[in-house]
Amino acid sequence: MSVLLTEILQTPAHILKLDLRRWETLIWQGRAAELLGQLRHTLEQANLIDHVPLQARRHLDMAWKISELHRTAVRYELSHLRDALLKINVPVVLLKGAAYCAQNNRAAAGRVFNDIDILVPKASLNSVEEQLLGAGWIPTHLNDYDQRYYREWMHELPPMEHKNRSTVLDVHHTIIPPTSGIRLAPQKLFDSALPVQDPELSFFKVLGPEEMVIHSSCHLFFGEFHKGLRDLYDLHQLFSENEFNESFWRKLLVQAEELGLSQPVLDALTETRRIFGTNTPNFIVEKLVSQSRNKISKKARSWLFDMALRPNHPSAQTTGSRFAQWMIFARSHHLRMPLPLLIYHLGRKSLSREKNH
Picture 1 (cartoon, helix red, strand yellow):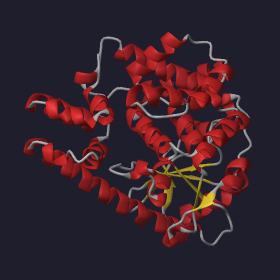
Picture 2 (tube, rainbow, N blue to C red; picture 1 turned 30 degrees about the vertical axis):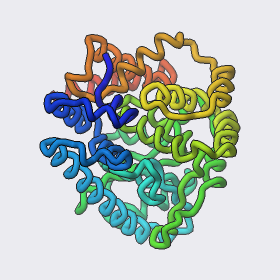
Picture 3 (tube, rainbow, N blue to C red; picture 1 turned 180 degrees about the vertical axis):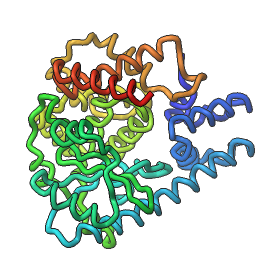
């Protein structure tokens, strides 16, 4: 079953064939996937926004206004974060949405932001956390097990939330859980990081274009796909931004291999091509396929991602959707930790849920 939202994002001119009932479906799918603002931007770029019926246009315009408010809020929050960390001489790299916003990447257009992610050296975690606590950010996972889970096994501190502004902040020290078995050198990420071009936010850095794609690919394809289609659309925009930059593609191939993260990059390239028709060079896909050690058949993998990368709305779901979502949940945990630790972790979380009920 095709998904109307992805069809329109790939071929905007297809809106000319929609009746009001299909427009209603499109708006619901866009809202469920958090892609309504991006949909409006796409139609405007294609000079089709004036062909949108008034009933749908109101929703698209409101989504765009909300995305602009989010962008302003992120910049405001980053200024507070800058002031909190300015006292310590620590490199602070913005990740994902905050980075797109600060750099004004194509992926920022129409996007809403749920939290702020930063990357700091592991050796600096204590001093960074101390500064953040002093500035009003407090941990959200306070029980002993969750604290141990994040601090010993994960690639980030427990999420922090500001006591007054309710902003959620994730502080990373690398881009993939150490328990995944993939041993990458985070210093490579800091060495290639670039200063934010906006003078007001020049305190921060962002990952280089290739590393930004690699991290976004890991975040999605090692994750649980809660916002999978939105995150994949981010990758589509990052790839499209570098469509004609041959050095980007060659460096992406080298960096992915050096970091041991070729598979999530291959998944990102394959799925953006399939779902959004992203124009990417054949040579990089062919090279990554030749390096792949993936044990799941191409057909099964394609089905799993097709089911999981759908808006969470009845019009886009099929009978296999729930099973695929469970498979993705199990897969994400298996990728992030070895089986004995996974069994222990899921057992502890299950007991915790039972106690809370």
